[in-house]
Image 1 (cartoon, helix red, strand yellow):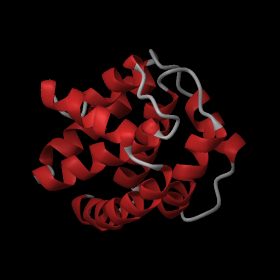
Image 2: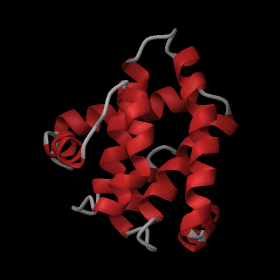
Image 3: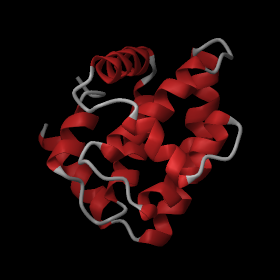
Length: 150
């Protein structure tokens, strides 16, 4: 877990300009790998998109900066535009303690557990970077994302 804390601190220190470059690189790797993992179905991509939104929203808020950062990725996942209100609505449909969200988290963790370690690191990096855009990854966000590692 000490490694995870270092990972979080590194994500919090990345400059806003670097975020876009790193996210573009990581999502460029993650999306095709997820399609392959899912047998070219969209279910795993959709699950991951919901997980990422919920990771950001784990601290109870989704701000415009976080949304702006993940918007291109969400649109690639869903194949259509996803506005700020729609992104918030997706998350609000699942309460952080709700069974539906817990089931999604478990499915995503299982799916990622089957992935190669590099893909797993890339997915966790994407989650951490999006959460860190406001300069801080909250304890609730860390706890939520940590589920991918276990």
